Image (cartoon, rainbow, N blue to C red; front, top):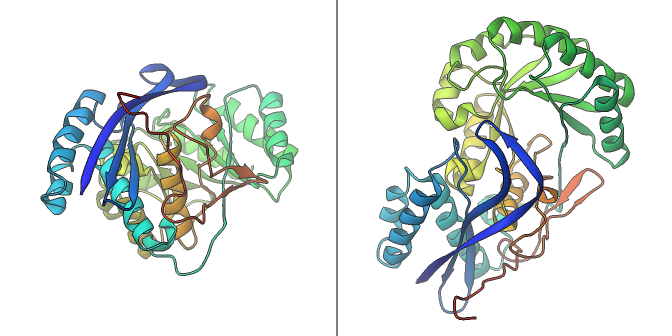
Length: 347
């Protein structure tokens, strides 16, 4: 088997604020594997605090592609400490296998029936109550049936006011979520969940810092559920489930080390009556498509955070996973269904 990788950079359409500052572009690696007849593509796009560094990812991939044809099983074990690199290699191999079997990837991952669309949520950023409500109304008008509101920067009482304004604006049929990104302490989180209950918020994503498993377990049991996101960068899925710390897992295949790992996590969570949402780390089209296939392969997955393509102004190729009327299209072509642009060094 032949394998190689190249670096890429794609630009964001608008800056993304993170704990480490603003991100204006995403830099990663496109992986290509070939059996001589079919090609498989994968993407490794590391992100600080979620995966290994860019330099560590490059080193892991360099070693991986040089040894891929000799010992694939050992290679994957070697990549466990480098989730983005592992994701890139595993996705390329999965894309290749699906093409060899002439099946879309989600069918290779385990779904028996065809699925053409997966529901997705709209995300509304931090703003005053009236502006937040107006943004949610626009999303619902575009067909979204689930809206996630960013919270945690204005104080609990103000956020409660914002969510109530959203509920009044969109009516009772729209599912609401909130995402605090670990901003609160335990007392603030308790007040927030109590206040959000009146607005019919289904769950709050990461109400406490990533390490506070006990605190998140203590928050469960009320009308507003608890979802973990950043926690999965600090603890394994099994540790979260054993601690009883979540009603919902937010699964990022890039951070978990591959599409098959993300799917396995969702299956394990369902056995514990914990729901799952699949999302991305603002990835390019190859990894986004991989996440869409994971979501499509699952039964009972909630509306997913996969409407992220518009964050990019440039990409690795045409996007087959477009969003329409609140759902993302699942490619039905063999493999990922992505025609990635591979630019040879001597082109």
